Every structure is written in C-alpha cells, then in structure tokens.
Amino acid sequence: MGKITFENGKWKVPDSPTILYTDGDGIGPEIMDATRKVVDAAVKKAYKNKKIEWREVLVGDKALKEKNDRFPQESQDAINEYRVLLKAPLGTPIGTGFKSINVRIRLMLDLYSNIRPVNYMKGLESPLKHPENVNLTIFRENTDDLYMGIEWKYDSPEAAEIRKFLMDKFQVHISDDSGIGIKPMSRAKTQRITRAAAKFAIENNKKKITIMHKGNVMKYTEGAFREWAYETLENEFGGYVSKDDPSKILVNDMIADNMFQQIITRPENYEVIIAPNIDGDYISDAAGALIGNIGTLGGANVGDNGGMFEAVHGTAPKYTGMNVADPLGLIRGAQLMLKYMNWHEAHDVVERAIGTAIETKRVTQDLAKFFNVKPMGTKEFGESLVTIIENM
Ligand code: NAP
Image (tube, rainbow, N blue to C red; front, side):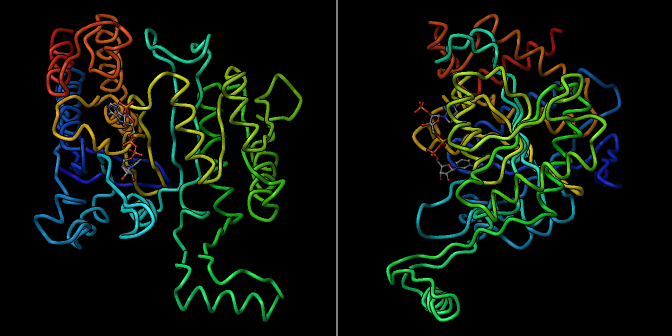
C-alpha cells in the first residue's frame, strides 16, 4: 500500500497505490462497480506485482444518507491526503441548492486541466458522414471563469450592494431583478492550461492547436484568454508551434459559436482545442455527439498535485438502478488515470478489451441499438470485459 506522490507535476506511483473512488449518484454505483472490476482485471493481466488498493470516499447521495452531509469533512480530508480519485457522476440541482461537488473537488485539488479525448469508435452510428475524422482532445481550463461559482441571487443583499457599487462608481446600471455572477479569467491560469495542451500536442505528435474563445464580445476575459494563450505558445513553445509554418504544429484561434459549426462540418481540422472553462464544457458534449454517444467519453481533471478521473456524462437519473447504463465513459476515465500513473500496459489491455467487445457486438443498450443486437446489462457487460481480459 502507498500514496501516489507528485514532484514537479510528475506522478510517483508505488506498486500498490491507494486510490480513492466514489460511487456517485444515479447510475454511478452500477458503472463504478463494473469499472473497478475491469481495471483490476487489466492490472492483473498486465503486471505480476501491481494492484490498486481501492478506498471508498462517501460523497453525494450516499454520504447524505449515511453521514447526513453530501461532502463530509472526512471525505474532504481523504481527498486532500490521497489526491487521486476515480469519481462516478454526481448530481447537482439547477438554480438552487448546494454548490457542485465536482467543482469543489476541482478547486480543492487545483485540477486546472480538464482533458477530454474524443475519438470515434468503429461501428458506432454518428450523425456525421465521416466520423472517423473525429480525433480531438479538448483541454478545458478548469478553475477559472463563471464556474468558480462566485454568484449572488437577484434578491440577496450582496447582489443589491454590487449593483449599487457599479452604479455609484462606474455609472453602470443593472436592473434590480438581476442575479450577479463574476467571470474572472487570469493570465496565470490561462498560461498553465496552454502549457498542458502544448506539451500534450508535442508529446503526441499532433499537428494542430486551436484556441477557442468568445473574445469578440467578452474582450477582457475571453479575448485576453486568446491573447495570453498565443503569447504562451509563442514565448515558451516557439520552436514547436507556428501560425503559418506547416512543418510545426499549426496554431489558430476560433470564436466559440463558429467552433460549434466547424467541428461538425470540418472535424478533421481540429486536434487539440484549448478552451476557457464554460466553452470547454459545452464543446466537449457537442464533440461527444459527433461520435454517436457521450456515454462512452471519459475525462481527466489534472493539476500539478493530483487528479480526478470521471465519465463526461452525468448521473442519467432515468436509468438509475436499472442495470442498463453504459460504463464505458467511466472506464475511459479510468484508462486516463492508468496513463497518468504510467501504467500504460494496463491501459492498453482495457483498450483491446473494449475493441473486442465492440467488434463482437457485446455492448449495453445505448450501443446495441446501432448494432441491432440484444443489449447486455451494465453488470453483464462489465463481466464480459473481464472475461475478454482474462482470456487474452
Ligand atoms: P446526463 O446524466 O449525462 O444524461 C443525459 C443523457 O445522456 C441520458 O438521458 C442518456 O441519453 C445519455 N447517457 C448519459 N450517460 C449514459 C450512460 N452511461 N449510459 C447510457 N446513456 C447515457 O445529463 P443530465 O440528465 O443533463 O444530468 C443529470 C445530472 O448529472 C445532473 O444533476 C447534472 O448536474 C449531473 N452531471 C454530473 C456530471 C459529473 O458528475 N461530472 C456531469 C454532467 C452532469 P438517452 O436518454 O438518449 O438514453
């Protein structure tokens, strides 16, 4: 047993690391159970001397039920101590109620890069004619922007005070029935997500980086994001990137609304996308739709001292407890974790198993409809991946 530690952003992983997991809400417990079994089987197949020691932390509905608190202090302490977490989706109410725990964990561990690879899997039905051209990775800034959650309800004394301040000081009128949210975007945070994306592009032989922004309207936040990202690329990666030299990684920028239509009409033009927090969140679901299913996408939230790995999708409440949800998104999240742990062999075992499952059409209902086959349950699909791995 041992803790994963970090040195200058590099992971040091013992052979039996303790890794935290949380079951999440809705379909979370079902997909987590399947995912951990698949990961354990892959690690066992790939190595003689390695094993993950899973430790559960209670968060969300389960924590509320058992500890009367959605995010108990002991769970926060464990996350702060162990710093690597496999997380099933957590529900967040719209418009009222508690702050997103997902966001709180990202801020707590300063997980500034949200990395979402979107690659087409052969056999899936996509709305595109050539979905095989979709092979992109989104680097979404994860700690800045409106998602910092600095906001006040329209009828709160704080909102009234801010409206008054803006009127008195700057003669800016905001009507009395307006809620207020703050959109901070900083140079340092833009620089670090840009560095993470550039390093990824260089290490993975990518040919294109696109900076996404809505800087034509939000000039001093998203416009500045564009400027700082270019500045970082030019100053720190000038030997590798260029705006016009095709022998280097080509860098361009694109306004957010245009980006949404461009990834549909010309997905082959996009390989690495650097996006502010909100834009990055939206574009990754849209990109997921291009390959036919967001249920199969995983994401990593990584900083210099920790990581949280998850599915891109949410709790899919209508499927709760029905044994029909697809665990592939969370399995993909776990694969990213294996990559960060430098356990590439185990990652590859999972990849091959997923390939076999798709080829042989052993899939859950979301994909079974494309293949015209009888769907497997979540549990049975997980077990079948384990069997595929054991028989490799
Ligand atoms: P969602 O949970 O992602 O579900 C939307 C739809 O996507 C489902 O109705 C289903 O589509 C499909 N889907 C998603 N995951 C699937 C899976 N594993 N297997 C099969 N189909 C899947 O989005 P939502 O309904 O907007 O959000 C529900 C809750 O999740 C909200 O409380 C939200 O805050 C939370 N959420 C959490 C996270 C997170 O923890 N990181 C992320 C996003 C949302 P069909 O109806 O077409 O079958």
